[in-house]
Length: 307
Image (cartoon, rainbow, N blue to C red):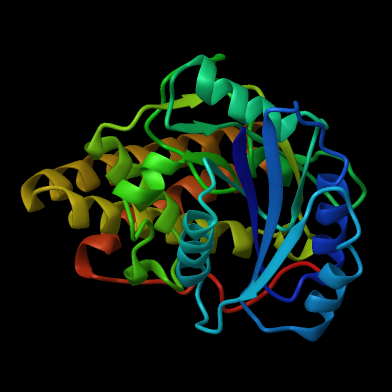
C-alpha cells in the first residue's frame, strides 16, 4: 500500500477551495493507493475552516491545519512536515484556484513516478477565464506544453507536482524562507533538486486553473514578468557560483528583452493584443532578471486574487 497526501495551500479563497475539495473527492484510485487531503490555511480564516468541516464526510479523509506565519514558503514547508509525519510515500501539490481535468489525475502522477522511476513528476496547467474559456491572457500565462510523455525536465512548479518521500526527507527544509513573500520559491526548489540529482519527468496529467478578471490586464502581466525575472536571478545566485549566476542572468536578461521587443513589433504590425502583452511580459522579465543582480525584491502576495 502506498500513502499519498494531496496538499492544498489556501489563503482567503473559500469558494475556490470548496470547488477543489469537491473535485478531489471524485478522484479514482487503485486499491494499492491510500489517499488523503491536507489543507493548510495561511490566513486562519473561519470561512475556510467551515468549508473543510462541511466536506469531512467524503470518501477521502481531509486534514486541516493552520500556518500562522504569513508567506507561501512557510505553508509549503508545513505541508512537507505534516506529510512526512504521516509517513506518506508521496506528496502532491495542487493550488486552490485549480482542479483536476480528469478523475485519474492523482493516480496518474503516482503511476508515472513508478513507471519512469522518478522522484518528481509534474504536468501542465490549462488556464481558463471565469467563463471557462481561453483567451489571450490565459494563453500567455500557460501556453500549450511542448514536453513529451516521460521527458526529463529540470524546471517545475508546485501548481501540479508530485514529490517522493526521498525528496521530502533529503531536501528538508524544501522551500527557502528568503522567498516567503516574493514568489519563485518553487523555481528555487527545482534548481536545488536538479543540482542534487533528482529525476523529474513530465506526464500528461493536467489541472485546470481559473484566471480571475483582476489579472487580465497589462499591469498584472508586467508585474508578474518583473517578479519572475527577479526570482530567476536570486535563485541562481543562491545556488551557483557568483560568476556563473551573473553571466547567466545577463545573457537571459538580454535574450528576454530582445524576444519581447520582437513580439511587441510583431503585435503592432498585426494589431494583436496578446502578442503585445506577451512582449511586454518578456521585456519586464528581462528587466527583472537584470535588477535581481542588485538585490531588488518584489512582493508577489500582497494582493489576493480570487474568491
